[in-house]
Length: 110
Image (cartoon, rainbow, N blue to C red; front, top):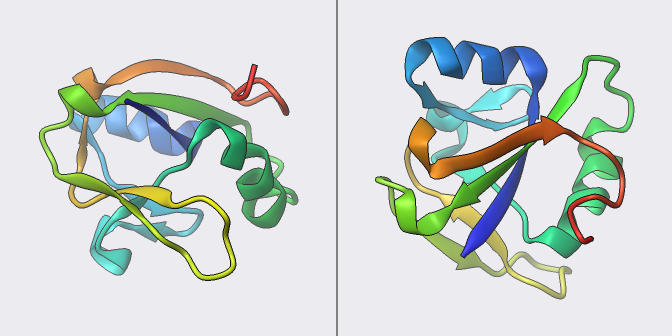
């Protein structure tokens, strides 16, 4: 399965240097939350609107192949949401990220 994660450009650049990605969501890391928030394609634009709408720094859309993850992941129900959200319960190994492109509204579901 392919899951998606919105990342600030600088956080992704830091991950490339560190060898793994550990940011959970805007302003919080894996140690703060316990997992990395991800999305299914049809959820990405809503997540961007809710959490990244006011961000001026470039945002990168990471596409993660769950078959390549070394950390466990699962789909979790979130109250009030029609679809479960994927969460990665550990760092994302860089070779599981099959694409890192600038976020463009609507590009994840096309």
